[in-house]
Length: 252
Ligand code: PEP
Image (tube, rainbow, N blue to C red):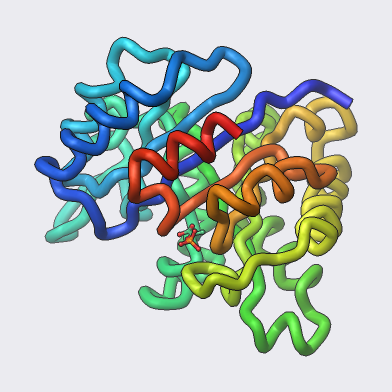
């Protein structure tokens, strides 16, 4: 199996304005030496993006991304941000289809697919999020939901673009609830995702795609989840908001 550097991604959601982010980054950078063997990504809000970009500019081990972009390249969409604006601002990664986009804002597989294609065309990395609701899990539909979301997300991309993506498995019932998937559950679904990527790309290129787990990760459970097979990184919401805790997770 190809070696994949672990990826640690902080989704700040609608938290941390520029003032908080400046203080956060000051403390985080002081606590976190440069790490060549892993990649750390920050997803601040669009308004906080420039502050974080400035703070990480000398640190090649730290990347920055945006939490969302609009599915059209430009136009009369008041309040939205485009993929080209994200690239111009210095984003390398774009979260696509986060559970809150799907379930709070009603984003469909079709919209998610358009966003993945736009992001890949702009040569940024889509981090496609997939995951089942509690109802779907209890109905035994976890694998089929994840397969449907993943197939839709990669349908409009060529093989090279798929090979450059990142995937995050985030069961909806685990996000912000304090309930995490067991490492075995995460491995099972990551295995389903990997198989689908192998079917699309073949073994070697599929092996290079990082599959992150997300859902109530904290400094206690991070090392255990990260040790599970096929878990190549962590996407973290709540526990990424405090610089000491987040630094301890990215050093795990
Ligand atoms: C997330 O927002 O992607 C997430 C996993 O949130 P939390 O870690 O707070 O569950």
